[in-house]
Amino acid sequence: MLETKVCIIGAGPGGATAALQLAQLGIECVVVDKAVFPRDKVCGDGLSGKVITALENIDPGIARRLQQYTEKLDSWGVTFVSPGRESMEVAYKPHYNKLVDEPAGFVCKRIHFDNFLVDELKRRPDMIRLFEGIAIDKYELQDDGYLVSDAGGAFTVKAQLLIVANGAHSSFTKEVANIRMEPAYYAAGVRAYYKNVKGTHADNFIELHFLKPLLPGYLWIFPLPNGEANVGMDMISEAVRSKKVNLKKLLTETLQNDPVFKERFRDAEITSSIEGYGLPLGSKKRTLSGPRYMLVGDAAYLVDPFTGEGIGNALYAGRIAAQQASAALEANDFSASFLAAYDDGVYRVLGPELQLSHRLQKLVKYPWLFNLLMKMGTRNKQLKELISCMFYEVDLRKKLAQPSFYIKLLFNK
Ligand SMILES: Cc1cc2nc3c(=O)[nH]c(=O)nc-3n(C[C@H](O)[C@H](O)[C@H](O)COP(=O)(O)OP(=O)(O)OC[C@H]3O[C@@H](n4cnc5c(N)ncnc54)[C@H](O)[C@@H]3O)c2cc1C
Image (cartoon, rainbow, N blue to C red; front, side, top):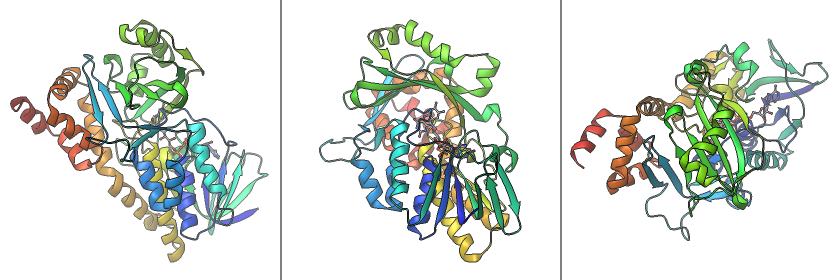
């Protein structure tokens, strides 16, 4: 039996970040993942500026190595396309200069990005003991810690504290933390890789196409290195169920039959199967910790309900969990009430953004409003710059969720 202060279940972005932050704080841990890396994860592969910021806060060396990582593609903005096919290009940073500025976003296949993080774990064997290819299936809360093991009981870890970062299908989240999947606050997504998609942006803007049948979800095209692209769509699970949508079929049919995509995908070649996975949305507050445990990333339902971004949030939560673990070890207090400070920390940092995104997600259900906003955005330089700044300033994002914003827009055209 292994003994450790902190056991992290899952070495995806959330778990890996928690381990790296713990190592930086001088706290040893055991990390267990059921996969052997490099491993794939169904995702859009879009990484926002939050990823670099979180890594920089742990160790600027990690952020620098990611900036230099050649498997990713720098992206300088987003193209939004409304249900009425109005499109608006929004740079992440107004008036960016590619020669001087650092790109605010990247696209990187998860098979590479997650392996980059796992390689960072392997750089710290003094602090991090990583076990791959072992699924943790059993959890037993004892007086002095958690005893966790694989199904057969051959691999056992005793830890004072658990950080649970085993993704959207976490059985711990369901069975121990008692957080249930609610179709109104959950999305389903599918993605495939393509080569030779025509018409992608010269500065690798990611594309979000808010097609009417998917609202408030969208179809995305995210350019990747070597002329590849990650193409997928997501939709609220409630709508998938009620409309009996087969998302894989819908993606194929849309790319084949839609007049715009038909043209752009004429010479494209699919280079993977179409795979699907769940997105646990942070549309409402949940209890993220309990006696001797904290949930991180998708296991904590922290995906942004508007953008579908979950990686940056998993990194932020991973850091906060590591800091709270440090406080718990220091105080020798692993009670639910002590660890509740973790929930406060997560929702203090991510809560306002998640709430806002939930409101925006509700707004974009209305195609007419969306079309109107896009129409104005294409003609109104100020609005475009405002939306561009929105990626930097959460306070500006708040404006977008207020009805007064639209009223002012209507009369100040
Ligand atoms: C279709 C789709 C598109 C998306 N697009 C984007 C995007 O473009 N940008 C973005 O930021 N986010 C996106 N997301 C969300 C993003 O993928 C997740 O938010 C992110 O992966 C969360 O990281 P995590 O570390 O919490 O979980 P994961 O990345 O799921 O990692 C969990 C890890 O736990 C391991 N594990 C699972 N069970 C066990 C077990 N029993 N024992 C041990 N280990 C276990 C797994 O092997 C895995 O390595 C998308 C999601 C989907 C489904």
